[in-house]
Length: 404
Image (cartoon, rainbow, N blue to C red; front, side, top):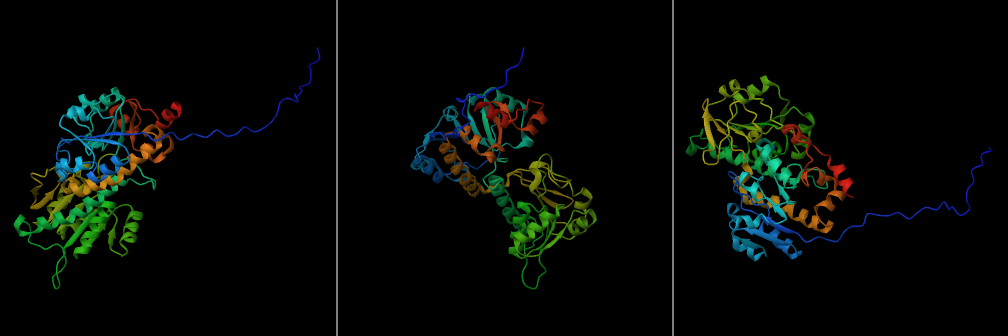
């Protein structure tokens, strides 16, 4: 049987169809809850009264727990005048669909979490517990972390602000403990005409290192910066607009400089995991009596072998006649400035979430925001947490695509 030739029907038209675009949904009205932080030594609040006023003016509902702003010296009256509702019951605050916190959810918060809640807070990987993550997965929570959230310039805005505060505070703390009233060496940080300047060694040329260097130079100290990343050292000099003494982390050179310095700052950290220990106990023992070590990397384990976690009640301890200051959450000691810095990032973010029609819609359009999401509707979307606790990992991009 002969096969018939393929024929093209004249009724079939090869015309292009018009493109169907993703239609932006209408703005969503948000109900935001700000609980009072009960986490250890947390004085910050994630939204200041001024920011709450802007959110309320944009038609959003904000509920604040009684005395939530106390640690940052914001009172309930200021929040009420900004248009927030003040509640005295902790359970009521946890009924809000969006929770904005300045500390990670703690043990006491777990039973109060609601189904399908959204939490915007820090994550503190080093202190994270498996049972907390499991509980949040069970409640189908969507969680955005401060540490990993990126802005339009692909940088970490909140981490940067907190690092700037920590770096700037380091020299204030050093100056305080070098004075005779705190059993210090009786040295004025910086120095005066005719007196050799104080020597400061900074280990780590990141944002903390840069701001510590900036402040030390402004006070008139002699600064030496160590880091194994030469590009970062170059960038530090460019940002400061001057050439300063820099070196890669060579143990003999580091030991030599530590031996004669008054202030040593540890500001080294890895992106994930523990901070590298680069100063041995032997190096610390060779330092001058009365000098001070400030280990800013203590929240990631610290980069001095002799470092031990301290608190604001007892911030220092002596080891080998050297003062050690190892308080983990330095920005919390400058809570009002830190709260304003966090608020400056979160308030525009919340307005943008609303304009996009909710967090789910915004995640679809905003790739930088995806970096910060570690739980999405109860699915764990952070690879490192899944590895750490051996929990099921789900790719966020696939999750979002499957919901469109």
